[in-house]
Length: 249
Length: 249
Image (cartoon, rainbow over all chains, first blue to last red; front, side, top):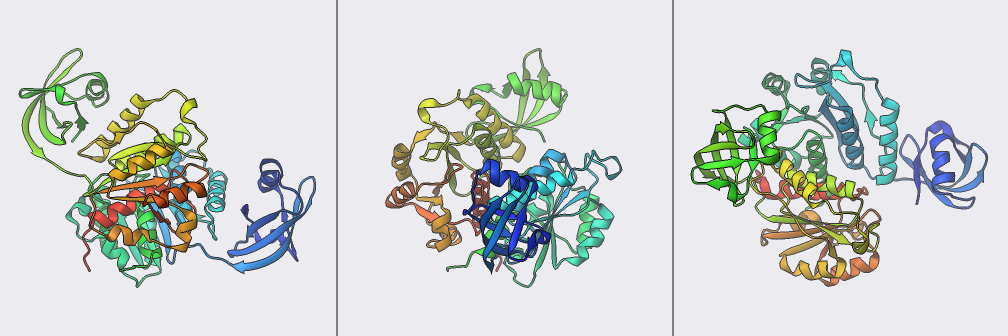
C-alpha cells in the first residue's frame, strides 16, 4: 500500500489532509481515486489505515479507518556522522542510510574535508529532508531520519557524550583489529550508537587520537578499503544483521 | 601506494610495461616520476613492488623489486546476480560490490525487469570492466571481479548448480523468517555462494517458486524494504562481517 509521512498538524479529528508534493504524488503520479486505501504515518510513528474520501483542487482528504503502533525501526538508535564531503556523496549516504534504518545524520567538519563550515555552498536541507521522506516511505520506515546541523570537530566530540557507544571506522586501527566491530555489536548493554566515517581523505592521525581519548572505539570494516560513501552502508547493514536477526544456533 | 592491475602479457622479464589509461593516470593524474614506487597486481593476484625506471612517450617501464602473494579477498567466492534493471543502477551495484569483495556479477532477465535480453541498449562491457578495475585498485582488492554475460532466467537456474549455496533476497519469505540469513552465513561448509536480488519490481511469485525448487534459500534482509541497488551492498557487507571477523566471544 502507498505510504506517506505527515505532520501531526495535518491530522484533524477523523481526517487527514494532504497537500503539496504528496497531493501531486497521489493524484498525478499514482492517479488514485476516492475509495482507495493509503497508509499514513504521523510524527510519533503512529500508523493510520485510511481511505481517500475526497480529492479537491489542492487537497486530498483521507478518512481514518484504523490506527496501530507499527515499528520497523532498529532496536537501537544509530546516528551516522560523516566527515563533510561533496554534497552529491552526502546525499547518496543520506538516502541509503535512511533505507537502512539510521536515526540521525550529522555532517562533521574534519581536517581532510574538502568543504569548510565557513565556506559552505548553499545548504539544501529542504532537499535533503525530501530525500529522507521519500526513502523512508519507500523502505517502510516508521520514523523519519533526522538531519542535524553540520558540526565542527570539537563540538562533535562534545556531542558524543550523549551516546552509549561511539565508534569510528579506521583503516589503520582496524587492521590491528584492536577492537572488533563484530564483538562490539554483539554486546547488548547499549541503546544508542554513534558511528563516524571520515571524509574522502580519511581521518587524520590527530583526530583519531582525540576520538580515542573521548572513548570512541576504532573499528575496521574488513581488509579492503571502502569509500567514504560505502562505509556507512556497510556499518548500517552489519548493525541490522547483528541486532535484528535472532541467532538460530 | 598507488596500485594498478595489469595483464600478464605486460610483464616481461624483470619489467612491467604500462600504457593506455594507466599510463595517463601515472604520468598526468598522479604526475609520478622515475624512482617512485608503484604496486602492481597481475591476473593471478600476484603482487609486485616496483620502481618507475623510465617514462617514455607512450609507456611507463617499471622495474620489479619484489613480489608476494597478497590476499585481501573474502574466504568464500560470492557471485552477485541482479535482475536486469537500469544500466545506471547496475553500474552503481558493480562499483560497490567490487569494493565489497564480490567475485562475479551476473545480470539476469527476470519477469519484472524493465530491460529485455533481445532489446538491450548497447552493452558497455568495456566501461563496466573499467569501473571494476578502478574500484578494485582503490579498495585494495587482490583480484578483479568478473562480469559475466547477461542470462535468461532459465539459464541462470541451470548455472546455479555450480555453487555450494544459493540464496535470494525475498521480502515475503524473509518476513516469515523461514531461513535466517545469519544462520545461513554462520555455516562453514561451503566455498562458493550465489546471491540473487530481483529487479526494481521485485521477484515474481512464480520465479520464487522455481528458485525454491532449485534449492535456493529465501532470505530476508531485515524488516525494511531495500531498493534493488541497496540489497546487494547489504548482502556483501554482512557476508564480510560473518566471514572475515573472528568471534571474540
